[in-house]
Each structure stands twice: as structure tokens, then as C-alpha cells.
Amino acid sequence: PVEAAIALSIVFLAVEIVKREPGAPRLSERIPWVVAFLFGLLHGFGFAGALAEIGLPQGEVPMALLTFNLGVEAGQIVIVIGAMLILWALRRANALYAARAQIIGAYAIGSVAAMWLLQRILAG
Image (cartoon, rainbow, N blue to C red; front, side, top):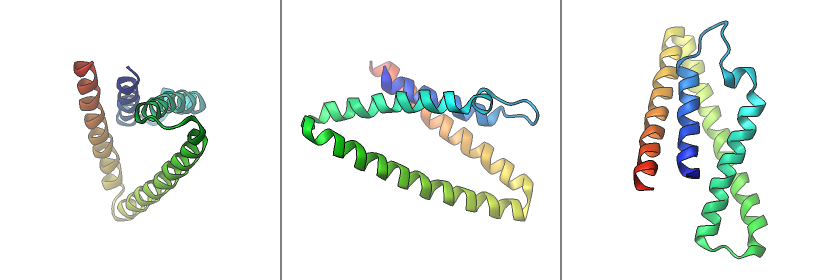
């Protein structure tokens, strides 16, 4: 159930991006701290479940959590910087290209997450 909920959370964010309209803030824009907190909690449960499945000794959990989180944060920073550079270049070329790239990216991420959600539901 946690893995399915994680996939659903990613679908939710993809929908938020696709349905975004100027002047009409979406839920994730109105209360981003609540959305980030709930998603962090949900994704943390998923990671805790993965640690339990691999049988990590209790004494190694704090270091595993720290190094995993540092790695995730470093990876996210690299991805965000890369995406920002691509969108910046697209905006300089043509603002319409950047808008289309955001929508295409949201559909791609949402589609993969929806497929993952269906796999989790049908397997469970």
C-alpha cells in the first residue's frame, strides 16, 4: 500500500503541473509545506520498508539513513540544476518551447507513475 501511495503522490504532482493555470494556484502552490511534509513522510515510510526488507542491522540504520538522504539530496540538486539549465535555454530560444517541455515532462513522469501505481495495485 505504501508503494502504491508513493506512485499516486507522483501522479498527483504531475496533474498539478499539467492543470496549472496563471492566477489559479493549485493545492501544491497554496500549501506547499503541507504537500512536502506529507510526501516526505510517505516516501520515508517507503524507505523504512525497504530497509526492513533488506534486513539492515539496527545499529546501522542511522548511518544508512544519513548517507541515503545525502545521496538523494545530491542527486536531486544535480537533476534540478540540469532541468533549470535546459528550461533556461529553451526560454531563451522561445518561451513556448519551455512551456511545452514542462508539460511533456509532467505527462512522462505522470505516465510512468500511473503505470507503477497500477502494477502495485494489481500485484497486491
